[in-house]
Image (tube, rainbow, N blue to C red; front, top):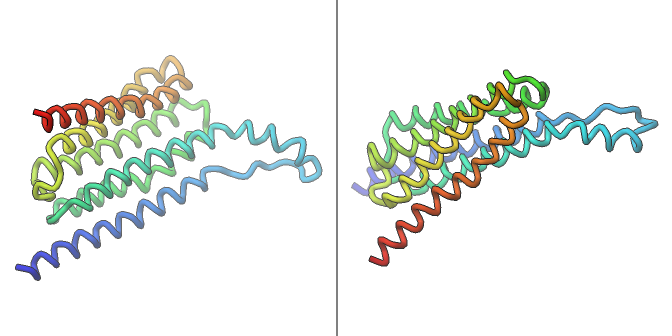
Length: 214
């Protein structure tokens, strides 16, 4: 029995270690989406400030993707730290999730390179939406469908995280409706991720506190 438990823990640790490596690669590749501006060496002091200002779409894409991938990692780390068992379906579901994560530098660079392109913005939104849905699916499978945490994650925490990433996907999906009217407005609407996530988290924290108080 002890040997079986150790095998299960080693299996989860290997999945988690591989996942951390993929996250590290994805988040490192993001910096490659930001190119050093090309200006005259002789006029670098006068031309570089303006060149850097023109690069704000690259900085915006880098910062946004960096923070969101960080959110995916925090959620993934919390989940896999709590898991006590796993199965083959979880391994492949996690593999598909990691594929969506490591793909993100590509739409980030495309959006940065083609700032005014509605297609590039839509492609980025769809990529982020897919990754968010995969995160929600991973949590749903591990906590609701199978409960691999074996009671180590509270019911409200399960709902909090699952609904948070469904909400993130909804924000990116809603931006597609704004896109035909304004490319810039669609991009700025992505910042709604943070207030929406905070509201969902607060609702479940308050519910948990009320339950404890009762």
